[in-house]
Length: 163
Image (cartoon, rainbow, N blue to C red; front, side, top):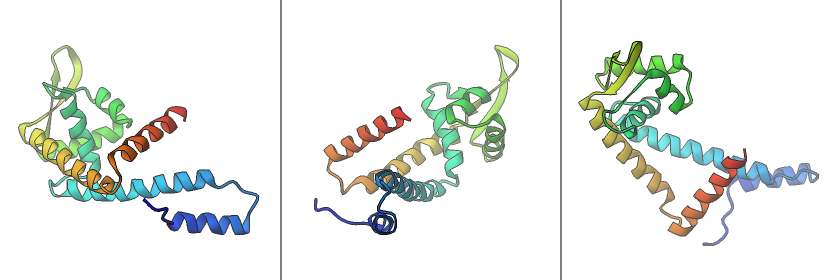
């Protein structure tokens, strides 16, 4: 694949002209990561919207779905898995419960606790939405050969591991 320039290259060129003393390599990396994140986020958001859910709703449904049978977690475990506050999780749960996608019930092992579980409809929506979201993400990666996609994943994992 030929080297292609992009808007980030233009921005880096401007900084090189105005401030040649700056090493802008990090700006190039993170500028591209940010733009890709926005593009991928917007594409998956549209995919999830077909099921009447937002990305935040999908996060809850997907976390419950991938937890395995019986597809239920405490609100605290759910919040920690999504890296959210319990308050932020509560608002999402209220919305999803109203939509009939999750249900809350008392925890039989902790009389003060509550469990959140996927309803059958929530299970179906989670499965359909994850497929639709992955289809969009794969579409965005389709122009890269599989070995480059795997290399990119490894590089990003290494970057995250060092932060």
